[in-house]
View 1 (cartoon, rainbow over the protein chains, first blue to last red):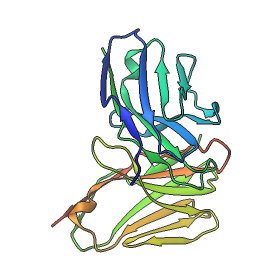
View 2 (view 1 turned 45 degrees about the vertical axis):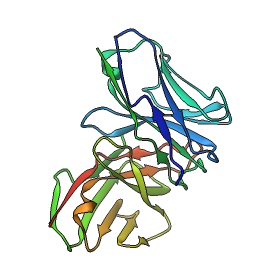
View 3 (view 1 turned 90 degrees about the vertical axis):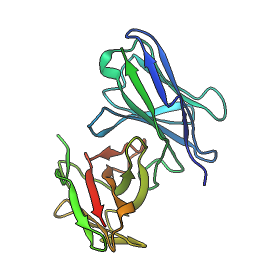
View 4 (view 1 turned 120 degrees about the vertical axis):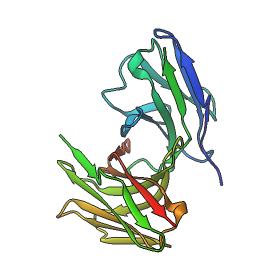
Length: 115
Length: 113
């Protein structure tokens, strides 16, 4: 069964450094998402992306965050200047539909640790 | 502000029994409600989706109900097995473009043999 893959599985970065998290969504999916989950807390929506532009973003997704689909397969999340509070598990997801009527398929996440 | 509440305590049940998990919401009008399973250190895995105009949906041993008047969904696992032990997440969507899912905190289910 096709799956969403994320790399790296664990990223350790110094505060203030830039980090790029990578995702390969399911190949025939057109809608892509990033969520994060701080340890012990809820899964929180960050951003949705379709047709090379952001569809919706949350308050968490400020100017320090950006997303890109640099080629036909990868979908990336960049954090320009990381803060301690960015430490979390970051999940990429993809779906065939974008109005909540299709399931989202999640990767197993990248654990981001900011020192 | 919108609020989604799931059973705050872990649910411990005996193998073979039916597990019932609750999702209540306030200040929100979802068009769709989804249930996901999450194992430790893994991403959520989709289980079932129900629309606001549907009362009940079934898939194998799973059943979900959706009552928009009570603002509540119930998720049932019949003939539960130790392999069903996981955290179960309720997620809501308004059905608007962008498809943001709003998740509850999840309920830990432990099935003992």
